[in-house]
Image (cartoon, rainbow, N blue to C red; front, side, top):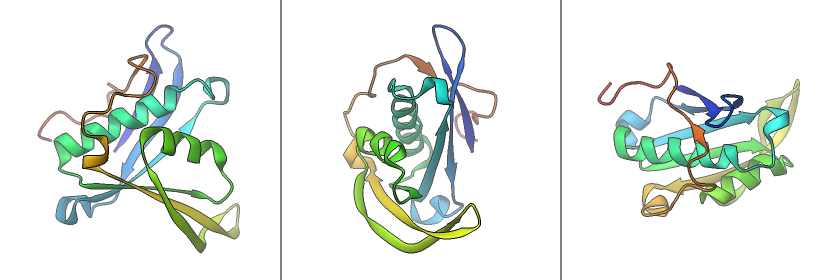
Amino acid sequence: MNFGVFRKDTGALVASVGIHGRQFRTDGNAEIGYWTAPEQRRQGFTAEAVAAVCDWAFAELGVVRMEWRAVAGNVGSRAVAEKVGFRFEGTLRGGTVHHGKRSDTWIGGLLSRDRAGREHPGGDRVSTDHATRPERGA
């Protein structure tokens, strides 16, 4: 499931956030991935959107554990994850292929109970209501 993320004030594309993994339907685990438009970075928009998508997945899809992974050294991605509440869990040696080269991967986890009662970082400045968002109960 992929979501477009747009600024409410200008309508500009901010980011894309996706939930991956069929396993959440059976074991409650899913993985989140995201990218941010370069001109929208370092403003907190992506963290706000990632929090909103995680909260939605916990409430509507029954996800219990969300995983975040990034190429080791991607400090921007890690900063977003940690702002949302993901806990850094370690490094997977040779965990991914990035630009044709095997690279180490950082991994973190967020449990539904970690987000309970937390506000979205940054408030309510972005919209994740996009045509790709499934309707409730879908």
